[in-house]
Image (cartoon, rainbow, N blue to C red; front, side, top):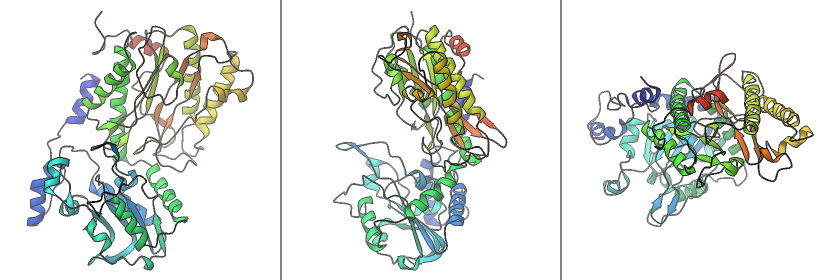
Length: 483
């Protein structure tokens, strides 16, 4: 089976299978099963409720005695008038609950307490169902659905958050994630996120300055840094479809295409393979735009002799890939482009060699930085190593996961960490060097899993050697324009 079809087979296999099974359901749960679980079994390979239960248990182990951790769902972001952006849950909230709806609060306690007549060590407050609203906005879990599917001990409607007795003063520690910014007050909904935050501040006597936010950030960073096998399965899918997209562009690229057409090819591959969204805006920077690190407009027509930096990542069930390749629009690197590319490749190889347990998180960057500094001196582009910052001005690595720049401690690398290794050189027009290097931007980025004694390059399927890229670009892709 060809790689493209194989990924399709993996992603879509069994999507009609049951996602959740209920044991001895009540009548209410049966109704929920009939009306809701059809919707939630579209994707068979979502993280299970047992995964999220395990993450809450791990959080509880790290919390201090007599403490409560408070998490708010992410706000809805408005794009224009009545058009909202695609909803993206607070990654911590999703990691701990699997819940992907707004206007919700999650409480995780070190020990069990009684709230609203229910004794538990975890509570979630969610919006209840509104069948009229669901005609417009789609199905929601509601109280019964959340109780059936999430595996959280106690589920209440968020209307109750201002009514039930939560004895905040009985907790020695109130741990809270940074409160969401951008929550908008909806006048006809007094239980929206805006009002829930106000209620929390009022009833919990929320301190304006506290170390407890930093404390919870640190705990969550430790938890989310190490990727469990279930997470790695989803990340491999996201990275796999991203590599297929890079391959397809290599086979389809010709002078005359627009950057947005390159973006269209990439994101078509993402969607065809089941990606819900892009992990970040696709960067397709050709020619002079290859020297703009976070270029996003993608409007230039690509010319013969241009390089194009393609920095992309499919998002799959919340987990993002992040892979960059720099390729020649006409299929062959010029001598000057090849010199810069080979130097970045050498730097990346030096960085990847440092990816092993026990090594400082910053070791890959230091290795890549040193390699590029020495190489630019060798090419006559700089005279002193400190000048390298003019052409390589960003870090080499970041954690990868539910966020593209994911949570982590940034201390020592550990087995289960997934990081990027992405050195680059950017030489814009007018730089104080030989003009043959002007408008040459090169970045090579791979997603690397730290293993027991070394590492695995998860994105190795996307060619990165000069000869491999040039050979693949001679093939005919499904999108290559006819001559």
